[in-house]
Length: 307
Length: 307
Image (spheres, rainbow over the protein chains, first blue to last red):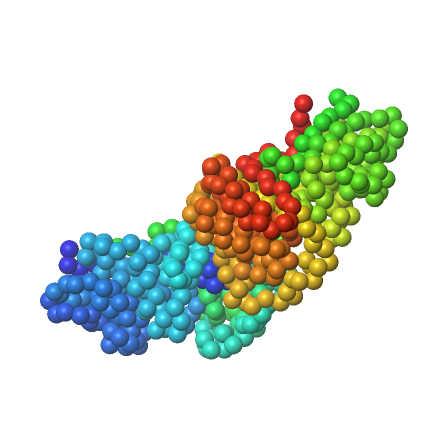
């Protein structure tokens, strides 16, 4: 096999009470990439569609993660990468993670899978760091492993795969505004009340248990972020209106996807997920802000080969 | 049935990263109580062995929880309570919770079980509040439900039963010193660094997952309290020496039981639990402080009828 086409999914990180640790993988949104062995050594990005991103490997997220893997192997050939980018950079649903994951996953397949998924995450972290200026795996882990993942720690890298019920769907709205990473970081509190921290970890412990036991009611009760959302939601226009509307439409819960501006909801069943889509649309169609909405089953597979 | 004898177990609350929410139930340590229907209306404590505790129902933890239930029912008889107290008050392994739970569990049995365990916890909270001056269910929940419990919230009361692996044993040392509740509260930080809070909830999410999946290594990796232990351990002499020794002896993890002074460890298998007992003994036998040590399988049943 000299060439492979892959689908690298969008992901939701910072899932409510699981700020900085819990993420999940989407099914219907993602990038496509072609990875090809070439005689020419090194990593060569030969095509980028839809968005204006750098072709120099060391300046491109997919290129940097590819180089991290390439430098760890000893081969007499190189790789070409074509990127068909569908996830808008800056949307808050893991655009850079999809790129970082896609190249290393594809190369690993062409090499006969010498690396496991945790090792692939280590390479992809280098690419992600180019985009987000810090090493984190919040979006990489669900993109690589699929389903819900809990990143217990970065050093050493420990990723836990949390099972989730079958009938769980996400609805996500991406309001097309820009939130600067610096701003979304600066607004985070440095210290939090112990009582609020306890509430947050009670909710996260409960959410992990609820996912294990397919308890939708408990998932709903646990999907609360009492620490970060009160701050970051200020940066997303109409966040509270959307939240009110989607809960009224039957969503299990709702929160900021990544560091925003996207807003995710989790829902039991496709029918509710579509009702929630309508509710989100109703709120935002009155605002003059353009937006995308995605409805997606939880993708339990993660990045995959297509064609 | 007019009379019942019950075993009400000791419990460990504040399990490391699960501060204020996670507890577990012990097997080999607990109080015995006899509950008896009598013609004389009301709650009457007729015997207390081993410790000097008040006989007036409204001044006794077991009496207050019993009265809370008694006031919620309409019967033309009363209850006598005999308390054979084996758990030392102030030891940090749920002495007051065992009393509060025992009376309501026994009465409920004699009444034909009109109340479920969550309702029993609501009554027992009233008794516990007499001892600890605040309404909490950290020890009550494991004493009533058995196994590991996560108290998601007090109002409304939500208790989750977390499964745990079969071969899990606790070793607990109770150094016989007094820590004043006021002191152990005053030493708690009011605010914590967001980064530490994130580490704590990553650990708790991970611990819940590890318990669900019987992953001993992950239980071990997750049993860390980066928020409260650094403060409260200062009140327990030789805490760090005990911790070092038990981890060296093979314990999965170690922490403060409740608000101390007891120190608990969790262990895979009885053999390791006994080695950990020796290690604890080695440390404390040199200190001149008297102590008790308990080795116990995790009690998955909780409070129960005996005889």
